[in-house]
Image (cartoon, rainbow, N blue to C red; front, side, top):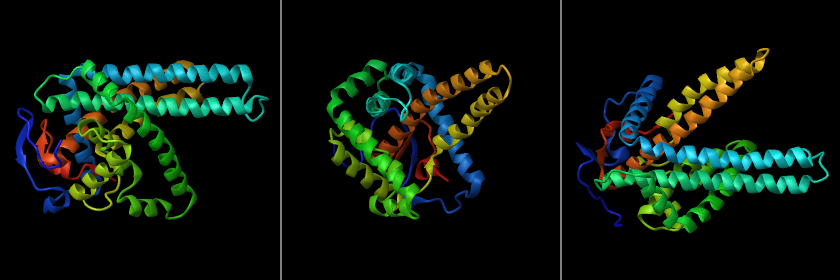
Length: 300
């Protein structure tokens, strides 16, 4: 794939703009209301795209089932061997926890890649299918394994540095040009569509973020902020059940709500990331997204 802009029929709106920070609206809405408005727009538009392709929900639901099976095995192992550090087999349990974490991270990477690939099919004028996403993820399997191993390690280390040292997060942002989550936003689209390995895909993602949205953008994607607010409802139900006598049903309801919300967010996040990736390449808003919101997708 060439690095320059490209256009595909049938998905772009007529709104066009220059890249990122060079095209900020003069009267951009700021403050909490402005951030919330952009987050709601990005979330609602992503949901409208999903409503036309509800089959994509199969991918995160399958990921939840597989991850649940992995952690069920870990729970059974801890029940049999004992909880570390009091278990005589603590080393074995620690290794199981480490392997389960790596498997979980890989499954999240694999199925997110499948969502991104399926969404990209719409830019080619095709109706995306689950098979399209799985086929593309399988074709990049080695790259996805390598990236999940790299990201799961570096991401944790970056987080520990941020928590351990004052100003650690700012130092990492200066090195990467953005925080780790933002700098890695387009790794999967770049790996899938440009056939790049993990290191080159990471550099490509860094370059797209910096060139199109300016140096060191901060915050989280607007969809993430909205779903975090929605998650508070499930957390409240869970805590209500936890603090109530015989509240097991409420706890289960809260957990089920959070799991389903996580699955829904996964697809919405994949749709938005894919849209932003193509917006960075073509400078065209797609699927009915406002270019003002795409110019400022990260909210604080």
